[in-house]
Length: 435
Ligand SMILES: [Zn+2]
Image (cartoon, rainbow, N blue to C red; front, side, top):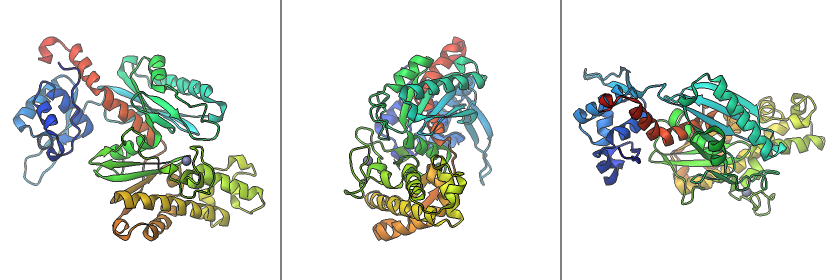
């Protein structure tokens, strides 16, 4: 058996390369079909035949092999108007389990998912980023240990750890290159997080960008599930974007695509931690919004946010600002309005450049203030973007919760270790059954 099967990721035969087609006819076919079923849970044999170009008879044989190995199950019956009902195929839920971690500015979220991407356990703890990198990493390892213990799964059932980090990531080597946030630039310079996780837990690990992992979750489980091309924008403690083209997240030449937050809107604007001036992140991130509200209250501006924070201005949250704006608080409304103008300006440039049909808006700000911001954002874009690009664009607020990046990270590692899961299962079975 080959050690390095190609994951057939194309959604349609038209998108498959010659190489992928040849690969499907090789000895790795069964593993490739296993990957496809994992990627498109609920797919029918007919769909698989369309996606791969293989005959239904050939596929039936391959699927039989996967069912025999206990890797795939036939689940439920689909329906067609023509009578014959295609059976849908899924990976067995308990084939393997995965850990997804979101190491965000304010909280660390850990999810344990099964092979159907269902969350079987979840835990969260404050990050306390300002205590420094070593304390944060210790806390992260501790909560992962707790999750491993409390999920009550045998140790060998967990096959890998995926981790989302909001810094600039070298995904190939699993290194956090930098983290342009207050006090974090020297703390998070060239941190080999993947190696650390693999050493600590003895499991394969992968790390990736926070926004990209939210976008992956959106593509797999959210509003983007039925879309091949869309733009995902996250506004939280930082701002980022991911563009999906033909169902795949575009990473750029070196893997750093999507740094929407560091699009400079005003060369005389505030200095950003990336070294530039007037980045949209310095003007419209949740960090910037909260700081603007806090400073205004300190200067004596009256606002219900002060009451919501019970007078402790360090407690101001984006939820409080959003709530105050809903109650027509002047300060909160004005600050959110200004933030939307800047987000809309940056977004308009991206829309002019990429001409997406759908923009999905996620992250802390849209989770709490989505309905409030959607229409003003539409208006800014309609005024600032080229008419032809903005004319038919659809804005949608993500329906995923605060665990989106952790879910995306679990999905990331599941795809990376799936061939290993397959090989382990084959080795564990009696020789006669594998044949
Ligand atoms: Zn910047």
